[in-house]
Length: 238
Image 1 (cartoon, helix red, strand yellow):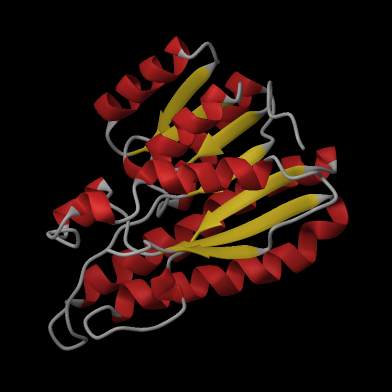
Image 2: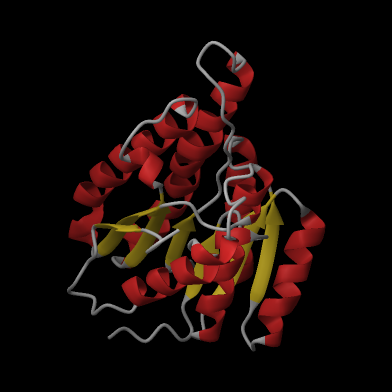
């Protein structure tokens, strides 16, 4: 089992939901955390919580859909931390509507954030992992990336794309002792799900952000010789 103490993780979309839960879970394992997001006040609050757990913590404000901002933000994090051992590509957005109803800009923004954002951040972090000849990349997709749904074409397209990107990446970088894991959760009672009214029933019966964070921690603690390529996490009886 891997000892995570002292490692350094970059988590996108770390100010709330899955990202925040993952940051806290990793901090409890002794991992130093850098988080990104678009809301500076939320990022500051999470960083304060992480520091109370006795780890180093920092943040950068940027939109993963903007490659120039990603380059600047990752450079700043590397200047603070010196290196990155773990990348969790979590940042994502969603909206629902039929192909005819949804406007082009909304459809495109989901692809730009969920798919292109994952690519942009990975592209900036990857050379540092290759240089060290070791690292972990966790990519958050969705069960919507396994099956399409009516009114979900943009979100599913982005998450299908993420799975294809991650599978290709894994085959490229495993020779550098870099583990790439793609995780596909079903609906989680996150801030985004509540805003989209996806958990209007009993939110306690569906997956919680903390449940997903536990899976990420367990995956990262596998012996280095072992790699979880992909996995789906579902609510038992929502």
